[in-house]
Image (spheres, rainbow, N blue to C red):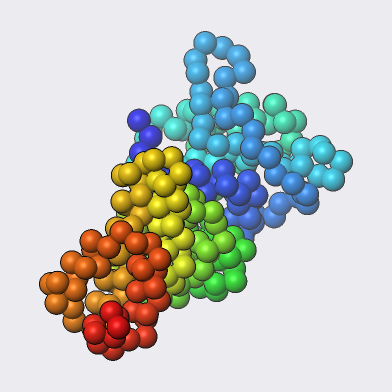
Length: 296
């Protein structure tokens, strides 16, 4: 059964069909032919024969005339699986036959040992016929520290945050990651956040939470979505979760700024069911110095 991490990384490539080609060119250093568009292709590689071969993702890059100039198979690998040496060549050969153009294999993994294994040459037996997979792993993931670049490609920023968010570039990487999230829709932003947060160290996860208090719009808009959805569709649980999320924003901002609350004041925020009031507290929390100022 595919894991959340496996499916989440694949979703980055589904969201941006040209991402695989960009990574191959920039991070793997492979020259690519000129193309004007990218399109997801069928990743069922059983064109003939009884055995089913199903890969993760496949993309076709087209020129201005609409003809294929390159095919790319993308495989997300979280563990070492020896049978891939038999299936990956099938994926490439089938896609090459289907698109009638050169093809490449890109293996994406967050694990160093898996990356080393995946990059090993696969000897096919015929003289000179050796498959050397291109691997995007911890050593060559894109490092995104520019918010503008992150907004241009939120998916690159996600990969960067997963690889480097717990390292020495923590603040720059996570700030850029949050900037990229602001350019995605609410549902995708939530998924990208969870994907990154799941792989961050405990310290980096706390730092991400702190940085999010400085970008209230990110969490606030997601919370507003659930409140509105609950109101329109009668989903009391969704509405309650949205209100609770905004309340958590208020409390997180106050805690981060060292503003002490009494138990009664904390309960007042947690129990509030007025979205407008919670949002007003969230904005004021960023500038006040005492709890009394919040409720004046």
